[in-house]
Every structure is written in C-alpha cells, then in structure tokens.
Amino acid sequence: MTRTDALPTPAANAAPSPRAVLELLKPITWFPPMWAFACGAVSSGASASGHWWLIIGGVLLSGPLVCATSQAVNDWFDRHVDAINEPNRPIPSGRLPGRTGLYVAIAWTGMSLLLAALLGIWAFWAAVFGLALAWAYSAPPLRLKQNGWWGNAACALCYEGLPWFTAAAIMAGAQPDWHNIVLALLYATGAHGIMTLNDFKSVEGDTRMGINSLPVLLGVERAGKFACISMAVPQAVVIALLAVWGFPWHAAGIGMLLVVQFFLMARLLKRPRELAPWYNGTGITLYVLGMLISAFAMQAGMPTAS
Image 1: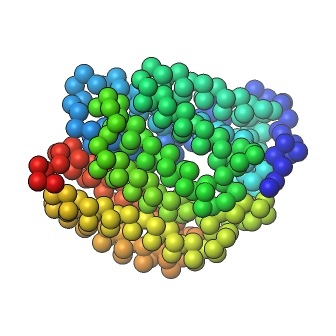
Image 2: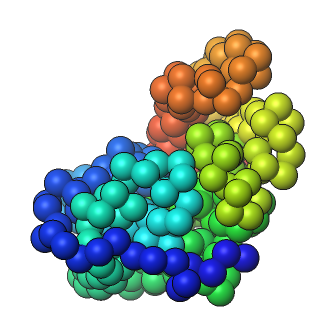
Image 3: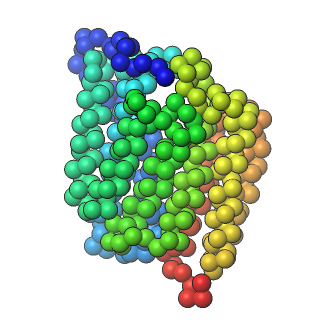
C-alpha cells in the first residue's frame, strides 16, 4: 500500500478559492445518490405533502454533503494518484494549498452528521454508516479502494442502496418493507459495474501507485465485460421479481430499457476504455430510469394476492 503520509502536500502559498473547493466536492457526482434518495422516497408510498423538509433535507444530505464529503476525502488521500492522472485537480495543482483539502473533508463530515441528526434517527445512522465507508474507502489503514472488488462494492452501496433505504425509512418512519429493501440492494449490486466503468480513466495512475482497480486486476477488456454483466444481471432479477410480485407492466418497462442497454453494451465492449464516458451518459441513464420505475411499483403497493 502506498504511504500517503510521506507524500508532499502543495505549498500553502495562496488562499483557496470557492471555485476550487466546489471542484474538490465534484457536484457532477452528486446526482446518483440524490436520484436514489428520490427513488426511495417515491417507493415509500408516503405523500410528499407535509414531508417536503424531509425530502429536501435528505436530497441535500445525500448529494452536497455525504457524497461531497466522500469526494473531498478521496481527493485528499488520492492526491499522489491525481498528480499522475489529473494533475489539474485542486489539490495536486496547488489551488487548495496545504491541508485545506483535508480540512474541507472534516468540515463536510461534521455538517453531514448535523443535518442527518435533524432529519431523525434513520437518517443519522445511515449517514454514520455512509460516512464511515467514505473514509474507509480512501483513508489508510483500510483504504478499500486498493482492491476494486471491495472498493467498488462500498461505493455502489453508498451511491444507490443506502440513499434509497434511507429515504424510504424516513418517509415512512419505519423500516421499509423487505420487497423495497431487496430492490435497493439489487440496484446497489448493479452499481458495482458502474463504478468499474469509472475506473477506466485512471488505469495508468492506478497501476503505478499499486491500486488494484478491476481494470488493473482483470485488464480493460475483461473488466468491461464484468461491468456489463454486473449491471445487467441485477436488472434481470428485478424484472423477474416485479413480474412475480404482480407488477407486469413495470417489469415490461424495465425489460425494454434493458434490451436497449444490451445494444449499447455491445458497442461499449468494442472499445470499453474510450467509450466508458459515452456509456455513462446513455446506458446508465436507462439504468436509473429503471430504478424509478421500480420505485413506482413499490409506491403502488404489493397486490393482496402476493
């Protein structure tokens, strides 16, 4: 494992700008957990009327706070890798001097816990769990991202499964129905493949720094195939379960989205490294639309015959 404490930090020769802090927090990454939270809220079946403060607070907690915290933590402990892969990032470029990046990560952790406490016990413990995984993913001694299997699993759970579960719990004020939990876990499982696609952009730096992402461990072609399988299989299980549970139209809708994804995957696998960003904007969009369809099925309630 690479020693991060032995690496030099940027010189404290300039005050950090708000733009650099915002770039550190990577707003573009906030969408998946915010979307998953929204799906969880829909799946609860609870009316939004009278719960808007929970919904708005939960969306802020999922994206601009917990997810942003994970990005700041990752950038701080990955500054040696970013110096190779993305030298213009705020920390390696020196736009966030000294230990500013670390201080931002700590401050955002505190703000996340504060808002979570205001949202109730379910949100608080979910935030504790998610933040613990965020730090464990990037920070020594665990640094889960050193192994693509464990690191991607942690990210997938926090990006998709945990926000869905949290929203359903705080909207209903109780543990979600097991059908709902199963769907959240299945979409979190599929997100493992999404995380794998995101690793294609940093193969060189990961290889040099000893980070065993799946593209490094398996090779780009095999990692691309694994990503497609890991995204497709959970969706197929969702389709089957919804059909069995009495939601044939919802199952058919997700099935059509999956068929289109198969065609997109066929193109992706021709040049997985180059086409991963393209697939993130096409196939992943269809993936998350399927999440929303599943949420609407849960909102409708289980048929009495099930």
